[in-house]
Length: 211
Image (tube, rainbow, N blue to C red; front, side, top):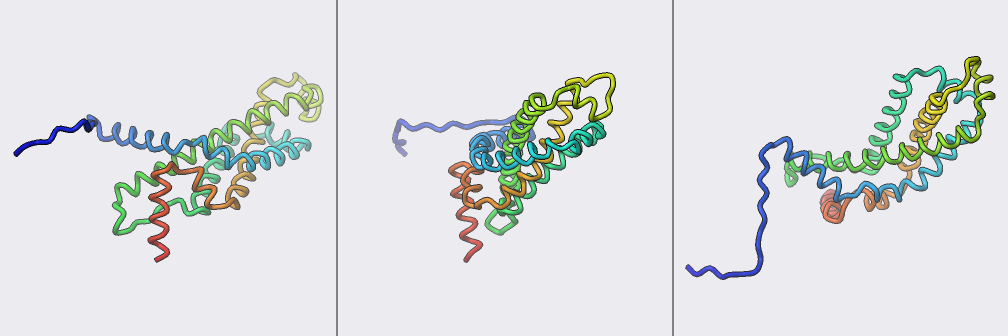
């Protein structure tokens, strides 16, 4: 049998570790989806969240709560707000794929993990931007002497107090942002969450459900 020679070639990747290989595939698929695209959709939500947090920062209640909350409470508030936003986006826009005969369980799990990884990366960047904005705002608008007098601190205000205020305000703004993104157009969220191949596959699945 004569074999025809061509200029095309194929590349085969051999992964030694199943777990390591799975993580590399997940990381690669998340990178292709490009979590930074989601920030374009979150830009309006970012403005709403920042406006809400800045408004609340004008009242002493936020300062006092951030002062009374210890590190674990602030961490719990931030984790809850981030996970809540992640769950709300996934559920409200039907981004979680359900089992089907034509969709193997192994690949469905990979696609769902990729979706969560992409959204989580975008939300963490969103949260970090809010934190920096609130930190700058609190340092600029709240004099140490006035803040210390309001909180009843006689030994002086340290920089950690401003970090706590920005931390608490970011968690509050993320909750508001989750509500806003949940009301956003589903097509816009889909376009910003998935890469090209993933969007086409998602459309095929949605068309099958409608039949």
